[in-house]
Image (cartoon, rainbow, N blue to C red; front, side, top):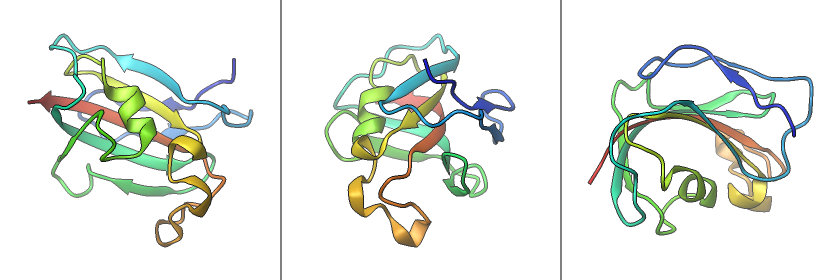
Length: 133
């Protein structure tokens, strides 16, 4: 199995990612860094998260910690990239999850050039699940 990056800090802290020497996993990879004790996130709910996003072995492209506010969005219904839907549904609220998202579950072959995301970039997120309703 391909090694995943390590993330500093704990739930609520802006993480720093340290990448292994290996290449990114070809498929979606999820590591629960700390398990929450809340109810499980269900498809169709709106979740409230803090997140940190970085290109594998590249630069940070977005995070909510620096903005000082979490974001809310529907989960499991195709509103966000597939990697988020496929990794966050079923996680307990209060969890910190590290997710490695391959391009085909991220932004696809076009990437998001204005965010510095190429079409073949693997995305790594640390997500703190604050709530769901």
